[in-house]
Image 1 (cartoon, rainbow, N blue to C red):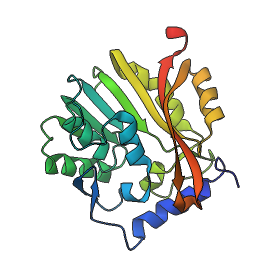
Image 2: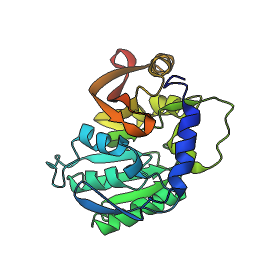
Image 3: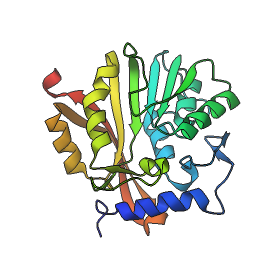
Length: 242
């Protein structure tokens, strides 16, 4: 079974991560403590959150502050990336998630770290919960890059953090993300070669987008049987500079 075809394994991991005995209520990342609510993606069981923070330059407790700016995270989960963006100096941060418990979890961690004055969490299916006039300097999604068959029916909202049926969410993200940017903004996607990269590029072509890999990192992920997995940070642009 190839990595691209391993959605069953990801579904199993989703279900196990909710009930495994070592699932914490509180965890440490970036030198800080974070609350983890039930039914929310657990960053401690996957390297993806830590890699995303490193890609974005937000992995240090006192990251160099950007010159203000606004940051939108799609799929905010427990809120680590959104909170770290606010701590790094973004003056406005929005965390969006399709899971109501994840929205609650992000709000809890925003309050824990004293950034709830500039971080808001919204219940949203990608961009559906945002006001039409909102624009951001950075739009970021650490995606559910494993493709599930289009016919697969999610058994819980938590499974959506692990797999994307027919890459429907990826298609919508590639098509819509650039529309939510300021004139100089960047739309970013954290992807992995456990996903179907050729399919992602086909979708980009079909939606009039170009993909450019900004960073890449190979990591050993022991829970996958010691697989070497390549993670990448991809920028999404209108094709031909449109």
